Length: 269
Ligand SMILES: [Fe+2]
Image (cartoon, rainbow, N blue to C red; front, side):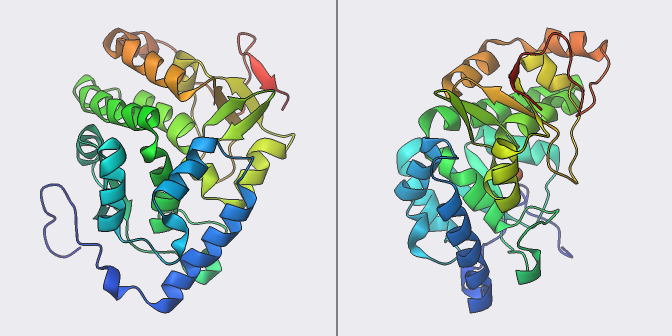
């Protein structure tokens, strides 16, 4: 951006500027994922898609989305030009505001895109913001982020986001389902995360998760499995992160493909 950003970095979505080709990219991605996900994704995600009327075609208008969301959980969706500074990101989350990219990938980028676009941000993240417990978790995460900034522990906290909000798995009866936005918005990883024999699937452990590095350029080598959103929220709210950061600061990081003797493996990898 050439002009200075507004203090909260938000910009108009400028919905009218989308071309029909851009809406068609959304529709292609949407049709593919909504055919694949039932049964694979946590039921709250499908309920959110329905409740937010996301299936009617075309890139959603953030204002309408925010009205639907606001009535349910008090969240809203705002457009930003791209990645925003950590402090801005956390402050939005702490105020129940989800920042989303407004651009959409090109037709030749359906499989993979490094920067989050409107399909990843809105299709991937927003449906679960209609779930009251997940909505509380993301706000709590934002508040935790503001505190982590003052404690200099952002790397550890960022891993919690990565291994839950972006790439988390959840128990579903005898099996597993996906809920992380990075998986949900990726056709290939929606299959790989549940069906492939290669990745490790380990029971969620807050300390373990916060020590585990991750790759941004490939499917995950390790997924962490939560029992429920309630349990994830409870652990986040009940943990005193100040002493935890001090403890973690003295411990080595764990590589993305490592399994420790203390890990509880949910299915083999
Ligand atoms: Fe994301």
